[in-house]
Image 1 (cartoon, one colour):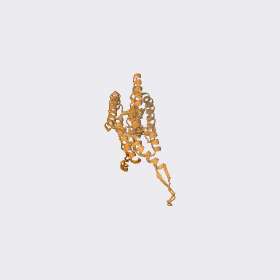
Image 2 (spheres, rainbow, N blue to C red; image 1 turned 180 degrees about the horizontal axis):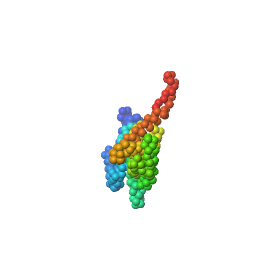
Image 3 (tube, rainbow, N blue to C red; image 1 turned 90 degrees about the vertical axis):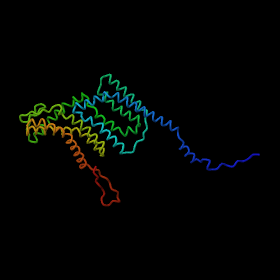
Image 4 (cartoon, rainbow, N blue to C red; image 1 turned 135 degrees about the horizontal axis):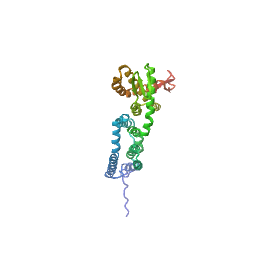
Length: 328
């Protein structure tokens, strides 16, 4: 005798939809294995970061020494805090990118370290220290992949202001900047009614000589203003074309600020004598250079917004006017 069994209840047989849900809820693997893999990756990255920090410690000590001794690069102490502010701003202003670690970061890191070893053997100290920036980019790629690197690449690029200019470029820029400062200050002083005689890089104010020394060539102002303007374009919301214009204008703004400083010192020489002009006015004018340059940058932005506007069309449902001018 063959006994026919009753069909199983329908709720006990998963349909297609329930089957999909079941497959979705099914874990890919044991949680302990996933956590162990993730923790192992984090430990590996931490070990690599510590080893790289120890490896670059002599280079970082050399940079700190330069920031302490050379006034042209004293802004280096502020680069890292400002870079962290830029990172926080870019991280919070948009949706958090998907973190997808990339093995290409490990390959690129090995290539950069090989290049660093070659530069070290050749005695290229500046180039060896400069490999710190691609190393940071490689670590970013290792941690979060291309989405994270696309988000934070301006922060990595801003770290270039940690480095001094190469000695060859510094020597090339120093003398022309010194000469421009002398000629520009002499012309401004004559326009403002103070007759001076130029002897090389010395301004003769009456009977008092005012030397435009190498330290007064404006290179320190140029580097500091470049870092400040770059940070401003990353932190302040503005149109892309404004960013380009402001970045391109930091060189003439730095030159103008330095000329104004030298001219103010020369007037103090004329009015109060060399003692006051040399010991008081010179230092005070130097401290006022950066605020003066920032004021010029702000005035530039205001002038650009006033001169150039964006025309936006209004839909036909608005009969009051056809066009509206919106400041940029």
